[in-house]
View (cartoon, rainbow, N blue to C red):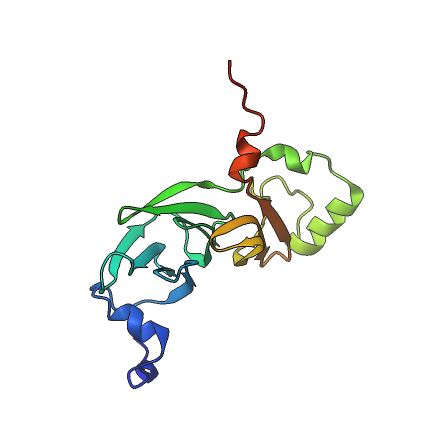
Length: 193
């Protein structure tokens, strides 16, 4: 805990460390309340995700998931039990919180190589020389849309109870839009056989 945080009771870090986690050191990188305000998700620099759930009892029940991913810099709730986190892996990831457990669902970036088309243009070569001091971008290009850490994830359409579109901004300067089809859109093409 920061030396200057001790006398400040209203500072959120003071309250997060007093939830009985036993893990009182480290940097909190992002926090997000759920739409109803009963759940709080936060990420730490050691790639751990926490959810404090106050809807079950008067004292919040804290659940933690230590991931194998790189640290998450931003997280936001997009539904009553789902949230998205993104950071140094350059890809937003969907997580679900159910029955006092956090589980990884999937990466939002499907890492398809086809979105870049494989074409090499003169402009692209000059951009690579300028940015990366190399003319060959095959070894330095990540298989994700973002080519550097994701700084922030925000809801564009909907709210924290039901988001249908997100945006992410990365240190590469890219602003990427992510769509989540609603349940009615997902079942629109279903047919009874």
